[in-house]
Amino acid sequence: MARPRSFDRDHVLHAAERQFRTTGYNGTSVDDISAATGLGRGSLYAAFDGKHGVLLQAMAGYFARLGEFAPKALAGPDEGALERLHGYLLRAVHGVPLAADVPPAPDRAAAACFAAKMALELGTSDPEVQRLANDCFSVLTTAVADCVRAAQRSGDIDPDADPDDLAYLLLTIIRGTDVVGAYGHSRARLTSIAESAFALLPRPHHR
Amino acid sequence: MARPRSFDRDHVLHAAERQFRTTGYNGTSVDDISAATGLGRGSLYAAFDGKHGVLLQAMAGYFARLGEFAPKALAGPDEGALERLHGYLLRAVHGVPLAADVPPAPDRAAAACFAAKMALELGTSDPEVQRLANDCFSVLTTAVADCVRAAQRSGDIDPDADPDDLAYLLLTIIRGTDVVGAYGHSRARLTSIAESAFALLPRPHHR
DNA sequence: ACGGTTGTGTACTGAACTGTCAAAAACCTA
DNA sequence: TAGGTTTTTGACAGTTCAGTACACAACCGT
Image (cartoon, rainbow over all chains, first blue to last red):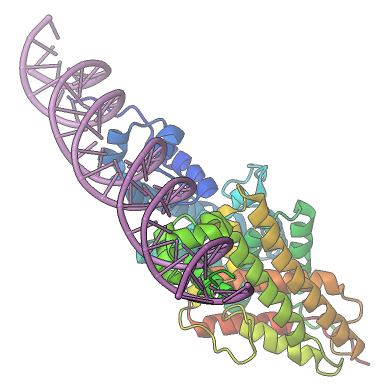
């Protein structure tokens, strides 16, 4: 028996995420968020408790999408594991993949991992942001490590390699391409980096 | 026949760099810079043309230090090239090395590449910053690629590998550890990533 | 020692920003 | 259809910020 809210929570948080992505946290004013989401000042404070609240909840939403998509993209039968890894790597260097059918963003720099960007801007002074960003990273390393193990079982990756170390390395490379993308390098360059990384994966010793 | 300036330009720019590194560009006010450098507002505007001018000149100074140190650390006889690469990689993942004897910074997150951090925060909207950051990256990739070529001549790296691709990949990994460091991961974890990367370098096919 | 020149410190201005408040609007239920 | 509840809207106060202007201090050559 009260007025229902006129906006979709996830939709608003996603718009705020885009804004934070392009102008950074400190570079975004509450009015910017207001314009990007269509919500008035008062509604923002009532629903999300202001700028910092919007950030935390937007990051939580991002984390949820990540935890939904990445494991799904990497899980599957052992046989195709290496190829799934390959595909994920190639898509990831062009922007965090969050849906199977979403094409890479037109602007690579704006497609960098949201959590990573916020962690780099605020991580030293905002432990909560740092923790959330690290959670995003953990989800990804876990999913990749599982996929590496699957590839090892199917004989496509050296069984002596440590799957966790390999997962950390691959994710570090992916995050590194966020930075290289921010430098303005071409899509072809990023693809080349991804292929080089993939080519160096330790294969089993045949003989 | 005029009053000389009472500050050392490089010293001031370095202090400003530290401030930008810890609080970001948009998170730093002119008063913050003033406090960090000891210069008054007027002097800052007269000598560096305000906040943005300080950033550009601080980045230029950073670029100069980078171009001074990195090639020196990686150049040398072909024989020790692989080991120099190894040493550089290990030091780089703990913060941009700018002098041979400087120990890694106490706070890893504050030791990330200055240029990379600024590029990620401002790169999309500030082409000048993007260009300067990319220049920093180019200096490093060139130096690393040269060292890879040296290691190939001495028979420590597969001569069939493309040294430029390898250099891009290694630098991408190093920039990736800036992000992983911002997540709050331990020094040991970063070392482990660097060692994993080094272990995967393509060795020549013996026999 | 003095004057010209340049650096330094501080106060000021107009704009922008954050967080809050109260009135109006929208909705549901009875 | 009327009342109660919650959202929405717009405006407001206090603060902070970037950039400027002006007065003062320091130095050097003569």
